[in-house]
Amino acid sequence: MLPVRALLQVAPNIPTNARGFSGLFLFYGIIINTCFNSNLMSFLTLPELEHVPETPDELWKMQEYNIKYLHIPGTVPDVFFSPTKNPMHLGIKKRMEYLPLSSNIQSMMDTALVPKTAQLHYDLVGHISVAENLTFHPGFVPVKMSRKPIFDLLLGFVLRKYSKLTATVSYNVGKLQNTGNFEKWFEETLDIFRGRGIKWLKKIKAEERREELGYRIVELAGNAMTATTKPFTLD
Image 1 (cartoon, one colour):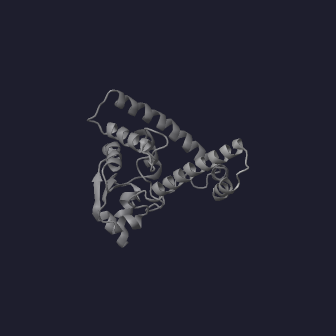
Image 2 (cartoon, rainbow, N blue to C red):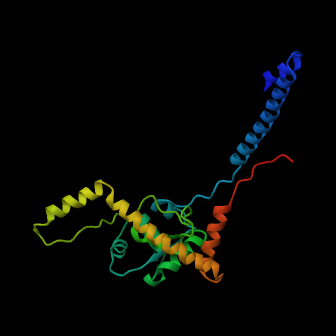
Image 3 (cartoon, one colour):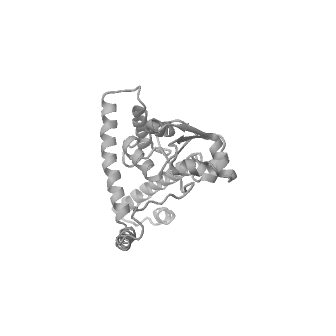
């Protein structure tokens, strides 16, 4: 912009049309520069979101979080927590609120709606619950999944000992895993559940069933998807 301004000041022989074009260039340059700076300032001053636990260690250290646990007697998590001597696992276990399996949906919704609440769940089942009950818009997920599990739970086929099918099954399972087919099929399954969940939540919204947790999920998603950062403007 400075060269244009200097040119306008010291060059009286510039044609009128060219001077007008240079003036418009300078004017719009000032507007663009001002808008860029205001947007940059609004971005830099955006408040930082509160950190939430993303690993078992962080959940253990953040004592203010309530921990919900769907208790199924005799399952792997139940067996895992019973004899553990690990301080981290013991600390989490002491804070766990044991819930029956029948409260699965309500517990997941409470986790999304109630601040400082965590839910211990099976990875695959948890993703399905979120897709079917907490997803009003595909681009917004109201809960944050842990980056690291408390323990790894492997799934596999059960065959008779020394079965002649063992080698064939192992080969094909490995091939499907390496080619990403399992992940693709699971994502397709989640899409089906998301479709059901969105249809269900839209019905709750249309009927204005405000007393239900599903309506609060709809409001939460709406507020998140319509939230915008407003830069400074020129009046």
